[in-house]
Image (cartoon, rainbow, N blue to C red):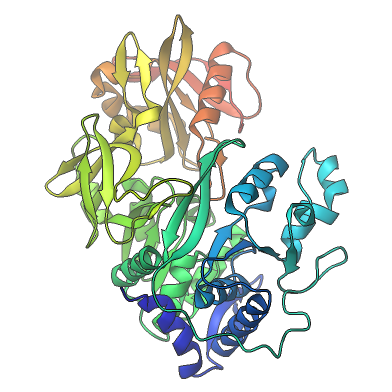
Length: 520
């Protein structure tokens, strides 16, 4: 199978104008600044490949990667790919026990880390201890080499003394390409293994979906955005971390395509940001209301992408189709070309296709990805009914939040979750936690929620809380467990932090007294 995207990128970095901007950042005013040209990327990839080759890294080898997204991280991935090795993506902030367990499973010959990762995990530990963080020293866990500028306490540079080594010709053929840890415990970490073929298929799917045009900028920070866009000749801008700067960056850059997570979109919208071209979002649920607000702020199209670490991307839906859907559940669109979808006897969605992961590390290959999502197929489209493990049990009735949460995303709602709060004897109360859009009139929002609440039938919540929903993880997904704890505190009267509204649902209306909520 052809590994076209990465191979084409590696070739084309020098075939096109090497002075052409490749990766862009932004200053505080949002103006673009060049972080790396195409020639810079090519030089970095060659240097890293030569240095890794000099260390004996080749086909079948494993390289740990703890480098922030950007030109150097991309160059590392290109170098590892060229050598036929696999990259184990590491998070130095995961905690010492978790990181040690993951490294014991992945067994990298060397860990490549930038100064920031080493600071977090090593020489800045006194600061970490003051913040009550227990982080490991990467050097204690195996050989470490520094990528990029070194700071006091950092390991030697990867390419120190080996700049004259010529790397071998790019490897052809299949093999493991990437290891990404997703879940599990310290005793049994779980990691997704993508092969060169599945990685290439995923990036080809992104290229086909987004269809970036050469010379026009794309905004996005993930590897699956960077590689296909650069291979198409489009420069890529990394999103600014500050929502205010990101809003300015979008206006100044006017990208042809933008990929941001739902929390990033909400933060930009709160800053009055404007969009251009087509906007894509994923990594967390995106309601029709959120996509609609993005289009109201200038986007030509606003797409929700359904993707998993095991299969990226799987399906996509544009705002118009999502908004027109009136059935129960969350429409995430038709499976993308090559993706096959079915459900098992319990209703769990299973996916397969060329971009599906080969296996979980330490397990046998399996062509089917068990998504953990309950779903149904409606006219060839995937409609999610919530996470299987998110089920709430009330009075011996199974309630799946994903069936009903989309209906709660009326105008003025930022995020809405249904969670279970223990009610004794193994029973649970169903609680709707609704985060209003900043500035929304709460009385008007309660009135707007009355109709969808009325239509929820046996799943109608026992209580409705207006509160800020906790987020978790790098993608800043809504944290159900933390939301359930927050709801329990509010309902118990042990409130902390800001304001929330509490009330029983009666006849489809939200009534009740004030209670305090917090951002847990």
